[in-house]
Length: 392
Image 1: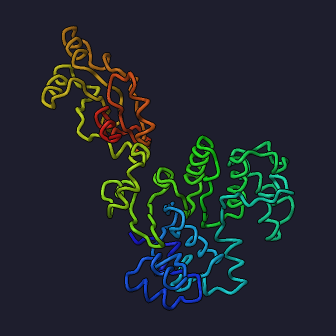
Image 2: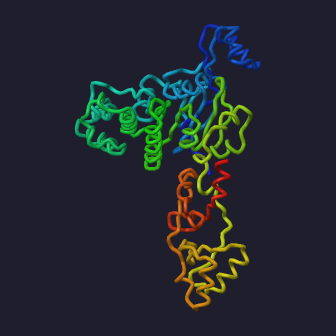
Image 3: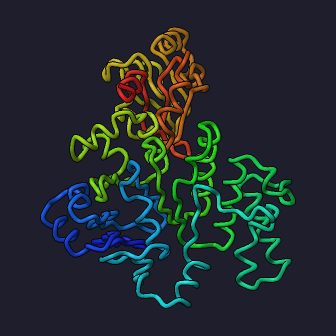
C-alpha cells in the first residue's frame, strides 16, 4: 500500500552566522557543531535532517535543548527558512511559496500550538477560538457555532465567555488546541505544548490529545523533550542530537533496537509500560474450548495443552468466559453441561490498551487478562509474568 506523505523534510540544514560556507564544509567533513562554532562562530541548528510524516500520523521529535527539534518544526510554516534543503507540505515546497500561498497554508492547511499558549489576553475563550475563522471572513454566527463545537470537544463548554486570565495553564492549552482545530487544518504543529504544565495536568492533556486524534485523525508533528510523552503520543519517534536525527522508529522498535548507545541511554529511563500495548505483551497460545463442548472434552483439551483452565469461545471466536479444570471435573461428575460452570466475569482489554493501564487490573484477578477485539473476538491473554517482563 502506497504511503500518503503529508510532511517531508529533505536534507534540511539551518546555520546561523556569517561564515556559513565554512561551517557547511566542516559539518560535511564530520566535525561536531561545537567544533564548527568554535572555529567559525557559526551555529548549526539543523544538519541534513530528513523524514516523512504520513497522513493521520503522530510523528514525535524528541531531543535535549539545542538539539534542533524546535527549529525544524518552525520550518514547516516558514517561521524559519532553511539554509539549504527543503520542507514540503503535501508535496509543495514551503520555501518556494509566495506570500499569498504561505498565508493560505497557515490559514487552511497548517496550524501551530505553542508552548506558551499564544493566546490573546484581551479576548474571551470563544473569541480566541474563533479568531482564525474571523480572519477568513466568516460571519459572526458561523464563527461562534464552529468555535463552540471545538470548545466542547476540548472540555471547556461553559467557559466560552471567560477571560483568558481566569484560566489555569491546562485550560489555556485546551483553548490553544481548540483554536488550532477550528480552522480544520490538515496538519497540527505542536511545539512542546504541554511542557509548561504540571505533571497531572500534562497527563490529562496527553489523554485529551489522543481522544481528539482518534476522532479527527489529524497529521501531527509533535515536539517534546520528554521520552515518555513521545512514546505515549507518537506513532513514530525521531530522536535528535546536536542538530541531527539519530534514529526514527516506532516506540516499540526503538525500545527493542536502539540505534546506538546515545539512544539506549536516552530511552533507558522511559516507562516501558507506556510503550507496549496489550497486543504486544499478550500470549497467543491459549487453551480454548467451546460452550457446547462436554466436560470430558474440555478436560482433555486442558490436559493436552498443559493448562488448568480454558477460555470459552463461541463458534466465531468471541470470548464467553473461563472454565477451570476443577469446575469441569465437577460438571462431569454431576453430568451437567459445561455452560453452567463458565465464569463469565473475565477481565478483558482492547489490543491497543497500554501495559501500564493493565497492571492495576491484574491485582487480585483469578485469571490472566483477556485481549479482545471490539466485537469480542479473543486474541490472546496477558499473564502477570508477561507484564513483569515488560516492566523490567
